[in-house]
Amino acid sequence: MSQSEAWIITALGMTVVYIGLLLCVAFIRLFSRLSARISWGEGGHASPAAAPAPAPAAATPPAEPIPADILAVIATAIEVERKLYVSRPDARRTALQA
Image 1 (cartoon, one colour):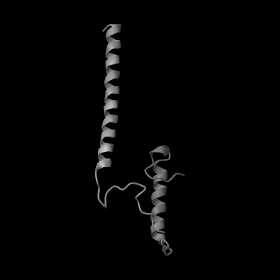
Image 2 (spheres, helix red, strand yellow):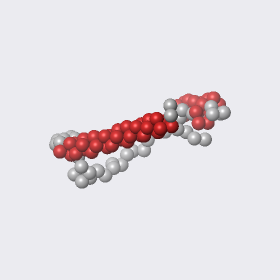
Image 3 (cartoon, helix red, strand yellow):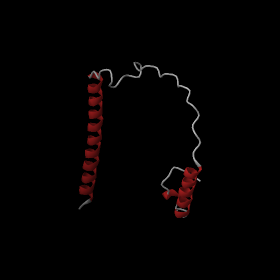
Image 4 (cartoon, helix red, strand yellow):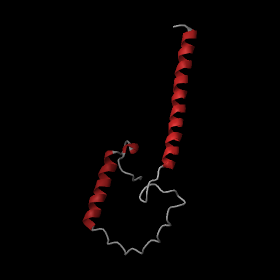
């Protein structure tokens, strides 16, 4: 393959990618305009201006304390996980960060 053929293939590949991106943008805008014209009814998509104001939060009663046996199971699971993944901290499965 010569240098000119390589440049032609590169230019054609980049052109195809950019045309694909432009088509994606065009379809997104088209579907956005179409969805704006559709009447969704009462339970459908409402515009933010037409959305009702949220009701004030009701006072919730205090929660019951967590039983000691449940806390022991949670602590054991965390400790086992810490021992298993001590060499790979990024491989942990939970959101807990120590």
